[in-house]
Image (cartoon, rainbow, N blue to C red; front, side):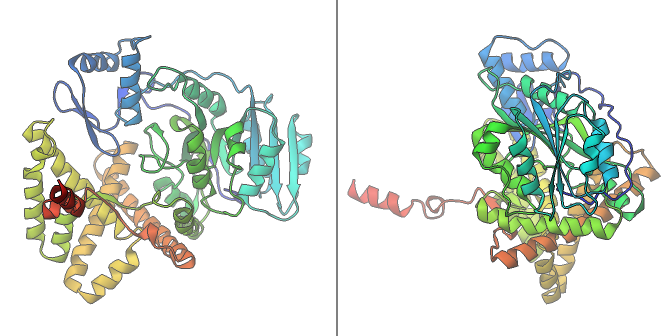
Length: 508
């Protein structure tokens, strides 16, 4: 993303949350019994052997991780990939073999502040993408800085590609001009990459790594909004990145990329002026592992006004249809099981009591499909699944389905009231989760924080959803609007046997 550099920045606090220097279970992960672990995103249940469970409990309690044991390595990799187990943050290494590329259509001040945070001995290539006042004089202020200028803006993708083409190192660190990073962000990402292992215990081929983007303090309505909803902040849980994962992409505001696979996929798509980072991540993932490391922080300057922040969210939404066209099936704003979707549809379209009854029935029969769990655990997980699905459906009614929701409400006020309750519940769930994650004070302060998060998410969802509709209509591609419904019964389930099965039986 290229920004004009305006906005009130603030200092970035680099203190790490407590507990990140040791192995720990992921957020919300818990033991169901002596050998069964549940949690992660998407929510899952994993049953370990007694030996594996004992090893895991010991590691979380502070015992050293066993070495040179392939079975342990495979188990740890599986748990980390599922978000059930988080590794300790390794010590920073070095930034050797890295060139920093900065795309900028900016005033000199913000770029100068960014340059001051970078190591003095690291090569930096600044792409001045048509800034009103040329940035070439900055080269005289910093040894090792190369400034390339486009007289007319060609967009962020072209600017980054030009910088990458001029780099001569095996790694490229892209960082935007409207950021203030941890001075050791590159060193820490390299350390994280070195510490990442596959299930076989060998060094994983990490081709792209990204830090957590955190909002810097800012004045005005834009600062207020982005402190509560930062679109670039992907949360506190480390994750492998890709379609269908807990973290599906990482933003190009800051990322460390292996230059060879970056060149192999052709770099950023210069035809895309928004969503180009998502497109790159999904293409480069075919060449190796993409990882998100929230132990590393880069601060992002907020926009000065709420209008500017919401307009940017609308622009992000417009990329959904383009991405869906380039990566069919990879982008869905709702992914839900039919067993949870059905009860909620009955509650909204027919009667809430019928929905509750259907939800109770599906939870009651859950042990049939989860035979590895005790009946009590299976029913509890099914009930939790219904609640999470309800929150996701509530958000989907606004993001991106607000126009359809409003039309349905106009046709049937009774259904409209139920849709409004469902949408409000979805927003409330997200607001509560946000406040809980930030550890806001209890009492009145927590209530106020939750209310403000609710309002900010509502504004964000409306702006983003309108952008999704704009892109879908422009590209004539409705895929981003459609839900992904899992666990649909096959024809064999409906009719006793499929048509092919019946033919085989007759011929046999």
